Each structure stands twice: as C-alpha cells, then as structure tokens.
Image 1: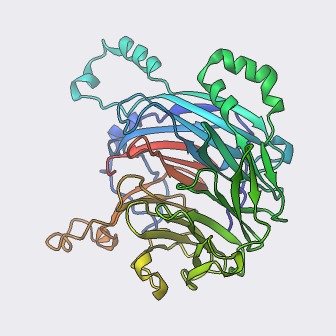
Image 2: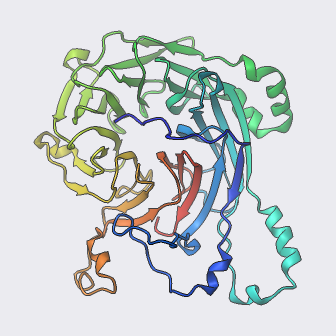
Image 3: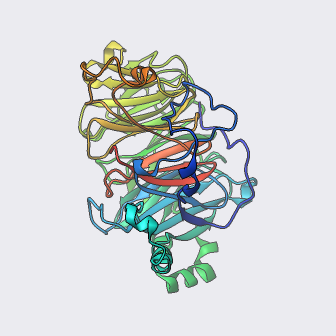
Length: 449
C-alpha cells in the first residue's frame, strides 16, 4: 500500500545531527549478551536492546524537525568510492508536517561524519587522556547545514537527477501535482555561510517550481528519472495511471496526456531499466509487476506482466544495474527476486520472509550486483547478499538452533528506528546506507557490506 502518514508526530524540533553515544554502563551486566532475533521472540520485561557498536563502521542520527516520507542522495563532485573519514554527503528530502503550510523541501549537507571510534583496552584505564579526548570529541562532532524552501502540502516522494549542469528534484505532492525544482540555490547555500545568509534573507521565500503538472487529477507516490535519457521521467498515481515526461528546450517538459494503462489499482513504484532507454517497470496495489516499452502507444505499451507477484499490494521495486534482476517488496512482508529472462513465467527466483510487516523500501547496492537492502514497517532494515550459500558443515548443530531458521543470505538486521519509510545507498560512499523514519534519519555503514 502507499506509505501511510506517520502515526504520531512529535513537535518539530531544531535540526540536529548526532553520533550515537556508546552504552558504557553495560559492562557490569549480570547476564551475558545475547543476539536478538527480531520476530523470533518478544523482549521480556526489563530487557532492552543495546546497539552493538562493533557491528558498525559508521553510525549517525539526524533530525530535521517534521519527519520526511522520502529523500534522495544528491551526487556531488567530491569523488567516487569515498571511504576515508570524515565523510560529507548531500541529501534532498521532503517533509510531512501537521499542516499543509508547515511543509518544506529540504537540501542538507551532512559533514564531519566520523566513523565509530574503537577504544583500545589500555585507553579505557588511562584517565590522564580525558582532556585531549574531550577536545577530540569536539572536533569529531557531526555537522548539518540545512536550506529549506516552503512547500504547500506534504511531499509523498521525491527523486533527484542531474540535468544541464544542475541538480533537479521531481516532487510528488499530496495535493495531486508533480513539481520540478532546481536545487542550485539551496546547494550553494549549504556549502557557503555567506551564501546561506543571502539565501535566508532574499531567496528562500521566492523559490518556486520550474515546472508543474496537475494532470494526474489525484495524488501519487511513484516516480523515477531515466538513467539513460537526461530529464526523462515517469510518474504514477493512486488512480492507476502512469504518465511519461519528455524534456523539451527551454527547461520545460512535454507530459503525454495519454496515460499508460494496464494496472487496475494504485501504481506504487516505478523503475527505469538501467540498460534500455525505453523500458521501465511498475508495481501496484493490484498485486502485479509490469514491464513497459515507451516506443509503443501508451495503451499497448505493457509488454510483460507478473499478475500475482505478491499476495497483495506490491509496494516497492528496484532494478539491478548489474544483473537482469528486479527486487520487489510487498504488504505481505515478503522480498522477491525476479529474473527478467524468466519473467513471463510469473514465478520469482528467490523469496525471503524476514520482515514481519509490509516492506516499505528496497534498493540494490549500486556497485555489488548481489547485495540489496530493504526496510519494513516492522522497524527493521535488512541487508542481503544473494551470493551467499549455506555451509553444509556448519548448517546444523550450531550454538543457537534459532539461527538455523535465518536464511544464509541475510547479512545484517539494523534496528532502533521507528516507522521506517525509505532507504538509499550512497553511490559515492561504498556501503553507506541512509534511511528516513518518523524518528529521523540514520546514516550508517555495517561491517557486513
């Protein structure tokens, strides 16, 4: 189903970015630590989950005031394959505030992001180094710069692309229109304090969309920029219609008024093929996944269909950029992997039931073709590697029989967030995952990926 509004919204707080504090008081615990298997057993009275910092390379939290249903990574010019700390990253996000007038389109610069500090045993005993440690902690504080633009109505979903030397965001508004924003002024502001002062004084209130389309007649969530044709966009709505946008000269778009029709209920997600410029995939509340080719007339463009892809709503899909695979996540809590060479059979090549509530986000790793991450309404983020196979020698008779029920492809379960809506890998920072939830943003890298 379409992402529901956040269940309860705390008062909008000041934007903050923080590094998780370590749990020092756990050292004197009476019982040895146990691995907790989500869904396998409820927490007993008095028990609480404690983050194992040794399982993370990087972990930060950020709050932006009102929570964000959707965000995207803004690619930057700081280089590829960045793994040295401190990291810097840029995000664009849209809020879901209590009132339509209270919403904002956000551009964020998160910087000075250090990895988790490993303490050597001798350091823990040395009290003389506490002064220098405090100075060190001050230097290592994460920083957040935020440029906000007023937006009337909650933002259901947004995606960013590079077009004509600028970064632009396509924004699906709960008010029923899709808008295009140029992010140039916001990006300049978060990168320079003088520019930020000018932005706050003059520009902030005057930034408007460069283009807007209200032809969907209702709100929606599905949209995706083509990775092969700059500026080409598809958008899908809760009425079941999909529209194709073609960029035209002068920084505007031609939106084909004839919708792509084949779904019978709300279109939930769209993904362009990473290799074929005219092909895209869609998923729907009607439980199907469909493959389309825009060279055909919209009424005849549906080429392949898996009509019962999931037991009910198919919420999200992700098209692998290295292998002919699509991953899907549904209201049934199931993750499925589809081989496009066998798609017309209507049978997935892999099925994983780790999540105990609807899957809300799924994305393949940008560089490793067998790795993906998923988020669910069960407050879990899971990391998977399809290349892993169970070792027969250690498959049975292990230390904990409950571990035998876990698929070997499941690498990691991340928790601690409430009501997770969306996640993205950072294409320029290997292994770094970012997620948005009612509780705010998490920026982390695990030891598994």
